[in-house]
Length: 348
Image (cartoon, rainbow, N blue to C red; front, side, top):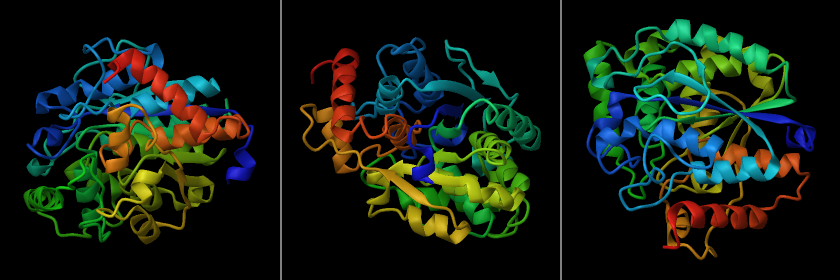
């Protein structure tokens, strides 16, 4: 797929949403205070489009002060002059930038067993959106920002019969698998379903134990991949979206790849390639980002397993390199990221 995309014109699309699941203590590193997670996705896309955040001061950081991966995405898109479209799947706080509204609602805590209200409607609207977007560009890169998303991914994968325990990644170096598994199992129990019960009913799976991003991103993929290649830009959350696409319209998967970062593929606490292979035969591509020589501790921390992926940073980096026919290398990209980091976060 990469050969046919070199020098072509992509569109970067970022699907944002929130779920109350992110507020379970210890689940997400998207904010020091769990309530902040409602602000993280809108702040991320403000950074992409404005070069700064408006709904919060500064930029989203982990409790240790490590900056959002939106910084990487913004730098890659800016360097390669790639257009960005924001899609809201269900938010509490609206971003101060233009966005496409799919009419979804914020997700409930999956332990209620009734996570979403109108998943099918959102997926259908997203499919129409994907079809139309595919007529405007050579290919789509679709990323996401939703705190708590690997836990909701785990629960959807289990509901759909995928052996995912201990395989989803985390934005934290110490992957809280036990907490995620406990949360997912409580969700299935609350919904009164057994693992694998919704293997052929993706709408039921996301409605009971999923999050708003999943049906939205799946719909965009289904609509767009009929016409153009699609890079699903993200980590193990994309396995859940892929399971939904595969159960809804497997014919489009010939035109789909998962694009992530080296940090996710190398993550010893997860197994993205195994997860994806269990669901469908689609390639997993990784941007070879390397921050080990960065002058900033906040960026070097990515090499220690913090954050790893998010806001489509792997797929965005890949598309920047492809669009520039290799002129944008990982070193060129790191320089741009460091410049932007300095301006936004300061010199520490």
